[in-house]
Amino acid sequence: MRPIKTLLLAGAFVSAAGLALAQVSGTGGATGGTGGSAAVGGTSASSLGVGAASGGSSSVGVGASAAGGTNQNVNSNVSNGGNSGNLNAHAKGQAHDGGTFSKSMTHTKVHKGEVQSRTKTMAHEPGSKPVKSTTGISTGQ
Image 1 (cartoon, one colour):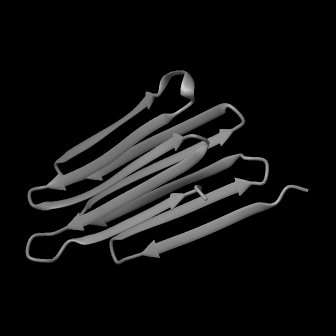
Image 2 (cartoon, rainbow, N blue to C red; image 1 turned 120 degrees about the vertical axis):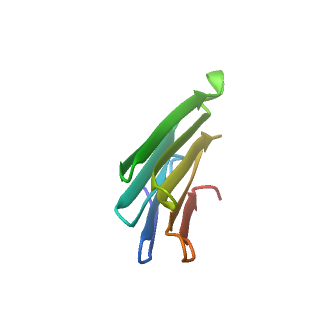
C-alpha cells in the first residue's frame, strides 16, 4: 500500500470563502489545488486551480467566473516551462457595479514535482471594510 498524506483547510467568511486540498503519495506523485468565491451586493466571483505531478508528467487546470453587477471580467492563462514539466497558471474573475465589487484570483504551479496553489478573494461595498480571504497549499517537504 502507498501512504497518502491529505491536508484539508477551509475558511469561511460572510462574503468570501476558500478551500484547499493536497495529496502526496509515497511514490513521488503530488496533487493539489485551491479555490474560492466572494459575493456582495449582487456581484459574485469564483476561481479554482488544480495541479498534479507524477513521474516525469505534470498537469494543471484553472478557471474563473463572475456574475452580477454592470461589468464582469474573467481571464485565465497557462504557461509551459518547456521540457522541464513545469507549469504556471493564473485565473481571475471580477464583477463590479460602481464601487461594489467581488473578485477571486488563483495561482497554481507545478515545479520540480511539487504543486503549489493560492487563491485570494475579496468583496467590497462602499462605506465598509473589504472582506478578504487567502487560502494556499504546497506539497513540498
